[in-house]
Length: 111
Picture 1: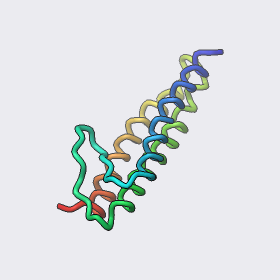
Picture 2: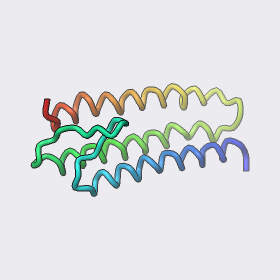
Picture 3: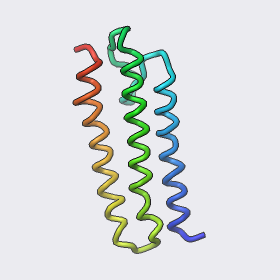
Picture 4: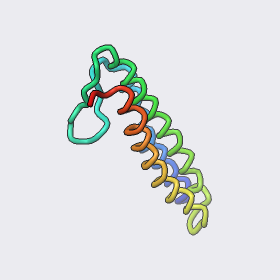
């Protein structure tokens, strides 16, 4: 097995953790947190399911995009396509935070 294939398998394994987080968020009845530190947002009781669903879908979409960004790893060592993985990962994380703050937080969380 080449280094590129091994790297991609690890990439998918880490991305799968985000899919598991998303599935958990979809199924739970308690308000889920997004940021680290254990602080949960204030969500109206009637919006908890919708909020959790939105956060769960966000994590799953992020994981799928992240898996797709790992495809250039299959090209092997010294591939110029790794730039896509590096820059795409940064953009994907920034997009994740932006969607949460600008869409989900504004729609479901109390100020």
